[in-house]
Image (tube, rainbow, N blue to C red):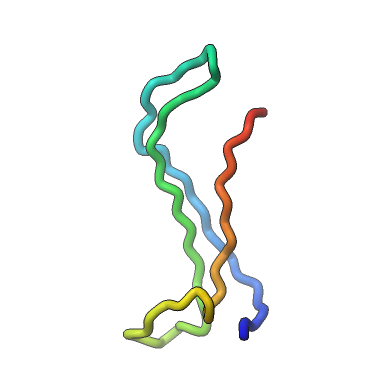
Amino acid sequence: MLIAHYCKVRVRCIFLRVGEIDTLNERYYAEMLFEASWEEPALKGLTNRTFDPAVYWTPELELMNGIG
């Protein structure tokens, strides 16, 4: 059973490389790193424990690409 708690999730997006840019069709090619991190209080001080997303909370992140 999950216990409800507020959690700060830090998110960052880094463009590693931007390739061909097609301004006519408003498209481009890019390689990027999308990273999210947070602290799980239930794991504090524990070592050698396997992370099970069914037991511990994880953010439900979605990356969307939209126009304007």
